Image (cartoon, rainbow, N blue to C red):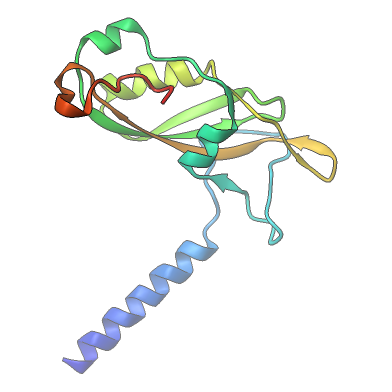
Length: 146
């Protein structure tokens, strides 16, 4: 029993250490400079930070809204040094929802980031929960602008 506890703690510690040292995988090839933290790791913004950095947002198309699909979608986004979306990669979600969201995200623009006075690209993840007619009391939320 005690050995099992020690093994479980060891696995937990190794997993936590790996999570701290792993490199951020980019959603696509990018040759420009990226925003990095003081340790040199690529900065990856969370969904709320990315939505706050968004300067221009485009909603999903009308056809996607009409199908009344419900679901959660998580998208990796690479923003270039000019603030435009360089690429996206769906991490979680059904293709019926991920494709139109990625299409809309390609038209978003974000606040530029700079490092040492030079504009650099950055990465982040955006989380969307979509539903339309069948949301019940929560009301429609198919728009990804919210």
